[in-house]
Amino acid sequence: MKIAVLHPWTQNTREALELQLELAKQVVLRPGSVEKFRWVAGADVSWRRGSSLLYASVIVWDRLQNRLLEESFAALETEFPYVPGLLSFRELPVVLEAFRKLTIIPDAVLADGQGLAHPRGLGLACHLGLWLNLPTVGCAKSRLLGEAADPGPNPGNFEPLRYKGRTVGAVLRTRARSRPLYISPGHLMDLESSVKLTQICLRRARLPEPTRRAHLSVGEYRRNHELNL
Image (cartoon, rainbow, N blue to C red; front, side, top):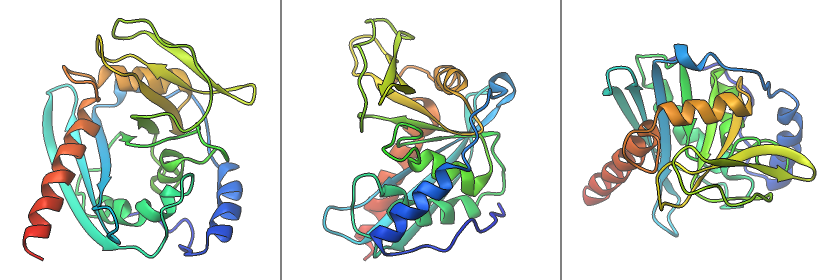
């Protein structure tokens, strides 16, 4: 998969903050053609605490046939520190390396991270969407910011996530008696489309199938890689 260069990477946190503000202006929120998104990619990153070596997995899942089409992996050293709110500068280089290895171009991407629900409106999913120029959704396991009521107990129940008077995402119950997920648009998607894409990618687990598979595969890849170090 060919990926155009969006910007050079920086190791300076101040420069990263300034760049986030500029990139946030480029994010496009619009309804996505969710029903037409058949090949959905999932992306996830793993690393051992204290290590500078990051691992990424990207999988492409055929949601209509419920089968894995392709998966790719990458491992890269990073010098960027772990700073909440700046995780994309630490994690995206290795994620993009995994995307470059794909032979299939996905219709849309679900990323394990925040999208618009970010202090500067540029979570990892927004940043990734700009790099890929693909419809992208942030599907996070925990809340970074904002306030929301607890969604109802049934799968599909959700409540708006608001930050500074603006709706930036949704708190979505994907499985009965399970903790909700925090969904926010990344790029070329609006909130309604983001929630809908997440829902149609659910099977029997709390996580949508693309990110669930990416999470499992990156963990296995990291463990196997570390055994050979």
